[in-house]
Image (cartoon, rainbow, N blue to C red):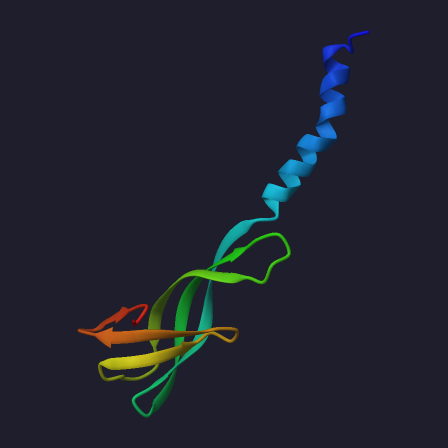
Length: 102
């Protein structure tokens, strides 16, 4: 006996929903966070745009970041950007933040 098309679709729906939920658990989101820059004998606060990728019950991973503003003046050089849960090496050169420093 062959199942009617609607019944076949209904039987396949739970699998499709499970696959859809798996995909939905992986997301990318952006936000602005406070950070700290340390280096050259200085420590200053900064604001950073952060794009975070969250996937299937794994810890969040910083996918992209951009320093938006810094409190005070910093000379050119290498700094550590502290974002609460991670540290990144960055360089201030010609008024622009470059990352990553290798």
